[in-house]
Length: 167
Image 1: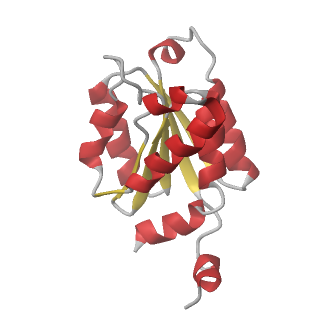
Image 2: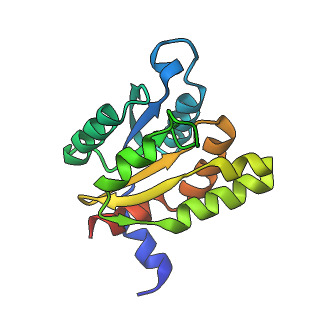
């Protein structure tokens, strides 16, 4: 089977859960610019987006992601924030144990492309991607520039990736 035919078999109507993880945004101190940017980019592709907002609390993060993984109306979960190196950044530690397979190339490529755009701050990201229960999970940094890079990376093949996660 050729690649283009294989790609054409991917679903076109995806349902994406966007989860912003930020103490300040959860308290209403800061606007969720990155979450809005991600939602707009996904909706422009025709995807349905649900939004969630949580503080940097490991138990709450893991609980919501488990719930979303069990939800029939979710094809992929994209978290924003909590991927840095401060003591409050717990997204990766909260989600990694829930994954059945990791996609290390995603984080590597996101950091590579981010480095080309913003330089060394991109190296602080611990972006993560993987699959669980037939769904994709992506953990993105919270900066709007990182979300823009992630959209460039994900949108061309998100449907194709979801197809593979379902197999």
